[in-house]
Length: 319
Image 1: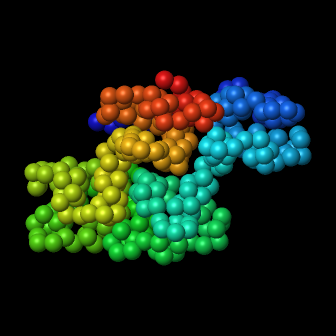
Image 2: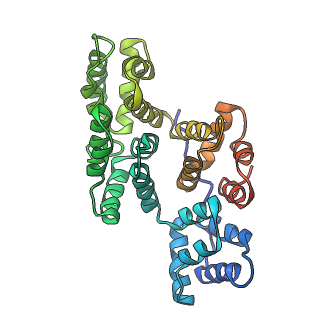
Image 3: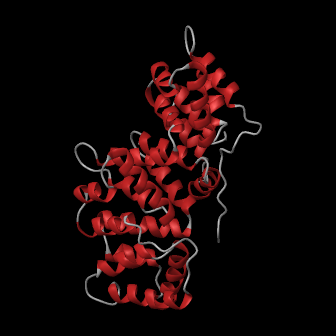
């Protein structure tokens, strides 16, 4: 069953970037800051519209809107506001760079961003990343990962995946048989075969391959991956499978894990809510409630507070 992606943030219509820039200036001018006004303006506009507000603000007041927001705000509330003001592809590039900076690598973030993208989206990210950091994404990633996991991500980043909508039903049967022969039908696992098929095939083709695999082996592809792989490669393969079947369920699971147990993974919480708000956040909310029998709104309000809570809830479109 194909679940239609429904966003929570849509373009404001009518839209007046001059009035919005003036409202934001008024919210930050003088003593104190009107955080609610900032939330009301930014959450009700798309990223494209926010960029127009930013340009108008600079023309109108000869000031940089991002600098002004940073000087007035703080904490996770500031993080969300700056994320909203950053062009979408640049925001994801920054998240990728952060995940590979400093000690250690956040493989979960790499998987979440890279394994869920179509080839067209991946090409945009690769181009923007090199422009921002003067270094190819693949080169930096190779220095931070290893083994078959590195190989899979490198294939994805170098743009080998077939274009969206590419389907070859007969080839899907052959590819399912290749996966079976590379895993369950032999002692050990030929990860290269899994990497090649998972990284090259379009998501539509992978959907057919997974159906054929079940007919052939009597097991789901998830069961096969669970038996044949572990560690980061297992997680990356499962992310691809989940995004082929239901991107909304994949992100609902990521959100749940970000809030489960002691402490909150605020980076993941913010990134998914911000980056999916114009794509399928409404759908993610429905999947979250279906899977976990509670609303995403109630989960987020239980983990956050203050202006940070208010802006996340506003981005989710309320309860």
